[in-house]
Length: 181
Image (cartoon, rainbow, N blue to C red):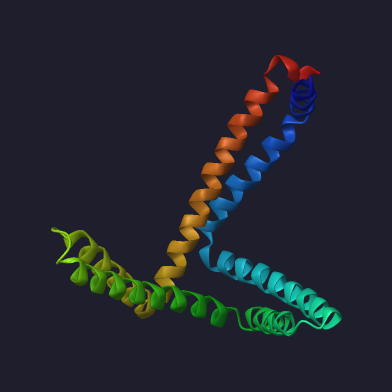
């Protein structure tokens, strides 16, 4: 009985699913059409989030006398302010971290594959994965703007796919017999 009530409720509000889907598709299209402004928008949203999270963590840390929470709060506030006032620094820093992580990971994979030579045959796949990770990291650091565009395209593609699926679901819900309530 409860599932019928939930289904009827959803069916009567199918248009909310439709609106969410349309907004997601529009967000994805804007990500492709105007990547520069979208990176700035995403950085600004992160800046606001990091700042508010930092303030709340700092307040909780001061109230509870938790030094690690106080440090986390201060770092969040600083990160939020830097991302807000210097968005290009925030984006570049993030992309450099991704590049450094990929290089370190790739080197570790190569080292692991060399150690595994005595244990398994055909460790070439791990070596190739390590080489690709190192190359990706080097390219990410050498050309961070290309990396930013790639991340934005992934987000845009995700938004369009999710949006289309929500629109399809909304139309299916709208046309279901229990939608009339």
